[in-house]
Length: 289
Image 1: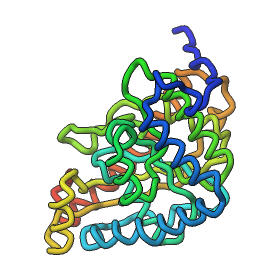
Image 2 (image 1 turned 90 degrees about the vertical axis):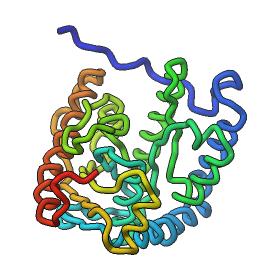
Image 3 (image 1 turned 135 degrees about the vertical axis):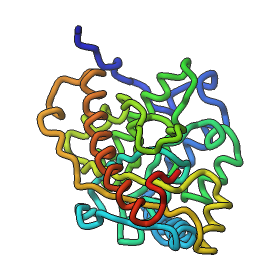
């Protein structure tokens, strides 16, 4: 099979794209959120709010349902180093729940969760939700339209740059999109974007796998079950950092990036096997949501 080539290098960053490529609302929101990274004082404030506000409300809304395993496998999260968290993707709230666990345990890195641009970046309400729920962790935007592929490459480059600069905690889903199948343990195929990000950091970002199950997408039901203490168990299983070995030194290609993403997804899948046994012991039926 012929070796596939990597996408051409991106020579434009997000705000270089013109009015015909980014709407005025998208451009304004990107500029505002980016400013929170560029100002040291604002960045410190964002980190504090993510740690002491976002983490607290998520913790309070899920604490009676959540069962966390594998904390002893985690590395020490240095404030000025970077981490990539790779997770399965069942719910809109996966990364909120997982990051809240780590923030409550002292994580001081700046949260970044790439998010679809639709709603979150093309409407003022999306901006308000991003600020209120995550203190602008949902960044940068990901564009689903085929004619906006160049924008996505620029977004990936920005994620890589933040990781290389240090102090970033980036949550990624190797599956590329939310898995809506009935079986939470059968994962979607790995996509190359995560592999490209991991390789580009050249080992300067620690890659940590996690499997989360039981959250669902009905936030009212989730919170009600938490406070009534009769909701579906939410299980989070962390794994040890992933060693990609010589893969990080190979010549970049789409094929390689898929293999790196598959290696990450294999680690997540193995944690799913652990979670299945844990959930069965909790009386969760071995499935979850």
